[in-house]
Length: 434
Image 1 (cartoon, rainbow, N blue to C red):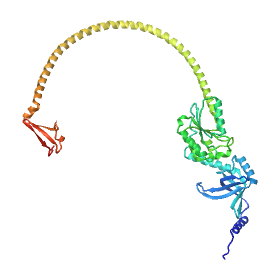
Image 2: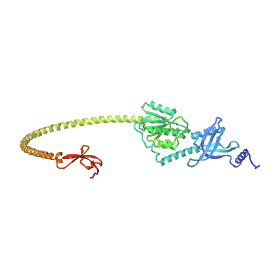
Image 3: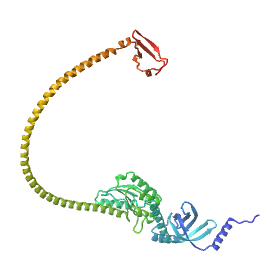
Image 4: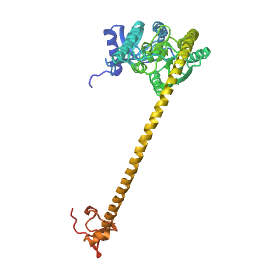
């Protein structure tokens, strides 16, 4: 029989080879693809590596953090980064290579360097910002302006979020008639990006009804902020036609949306405070304007009264002099007009006599001409009588009782009736010539 090994012997040989040839521990960089903590306190992860384009996996391994280290490492990581270990994070970890005859190859995580993850998050955010700048859209939303007054707001948040409730309560307590409508979206988890983009699309369809959009969250874990760090979401916010105010961070954290939105705030209540302050500024400005307007109106009225008094005195003096001058001028015009009318009457009387004589002569000439023209018409009508024309040797052709005046009105095969002076005959059209 050929020499052979049992599978367990081969796996044992691999385990011994790994133990003898490899270091006891390595620091590696990997992306967490899956992460879950079991009831026994052990944390199980799937680590992956992608190519430079991020489209294809180039490596994958299972890893774990045993319960005696898991709580300590996770607490330290959260304290430094503000995030829990979760899918999508790049991590720098110390691992021990393990190979078990039954369970195969895996990595035992013994330490983690949180500062690397912080740097990777910043790097990814900068990559998104650079891409937006290259596309020419990074500053579009920040270049918009809020209408005055801004009172109508479309809210994107989770309906059950504590931050949303605090935001609405603070606006209501202000006593100002703000108009708000919630467009629900997920504020944590895998559906954050798609649900917020869908909400923005619904708002864009009725953008004339709103002054601005507000994206808020509150009460969630800082780790959930990673769901907001995507290019597609940032691009939609940057290019949105209405100003977008965001309040999705915490005191020490920011997202890519904070960098490209019209304005960003740490909390939902900070957004509400800003809107209330804007309204107070508007009202204060209106009050100042009203006071200034009243003061100016009082001064202007006083100036106009004085000016009116001076003008009335000038008008009275001018009117008196003008009335006297016009009285004399009208009297002179009346005398001249009387003489002119008499002269015109005499001239018109002579002219009318001449016209009367000319009109009588012209009327007689016109009537004689019309009488001669009528006699001529009677003779022409007499000569045009059909029976007289027939006597001269002409004929009249009819088709269906209608006189045919042109050959184009006939077709070959048509039946026509021809009337002569002494009778008529019927014929069929054989050949038509122009």
